[in-house]
Image 1: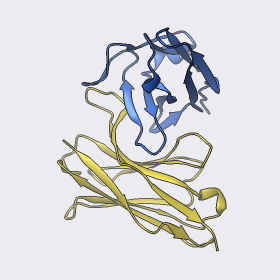
Image 2: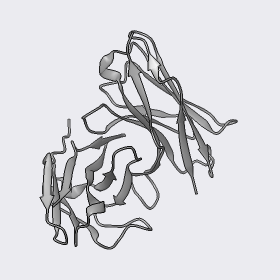
Image 3: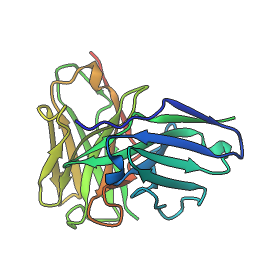
Image 4: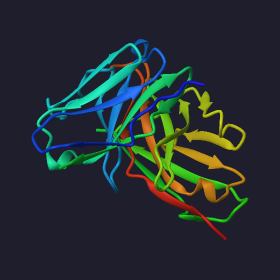
Length: 106
Length: 123
């Protein structure tokens, strides 16, 4: 079965750029979606179809996807960006999430 | 805009059936454009997709849960439901309902989500 691999944690200094990878076999051939999940809140779609932002999501959030790695990039990181981030793909008729990455803003 | 709200018992005994309902407002689950899904998050763990139902009534389930899961819909109430049988402590989690957009702009993305409801399996 298909698997998505994310690092458990990523740290970034305030105002700097955070990059969160999501690994999968030939993931570049799939549509990758990213979610921000804060404690006690519903997950929020921040990137869809690799590199598109839903309405209301800041331009600081961007995505890329090629080969075996998709990446969520958060520019000018803010304290409010601290959260868990999950990548997700469609696998046949089901959905699959990565294990999630805790982003810490220092 | 579309909003989703989960409801159901917060405590279920082991070996019994967990039953949750998701009420959708601001849009119709029978519109035919979206799938309606259940996703869960055990404490300290990541998101796990459980399954979904389409307007036609067709369903898809996570293979790891398929033998215990049933998702159904009541279009007259604009609700869809989750039944998970033979529960154990491992099924303790926050359960979310959500909308999937497979054929539209999101091409597989999930949005929006309900706020989630905690279900604890304990005697």
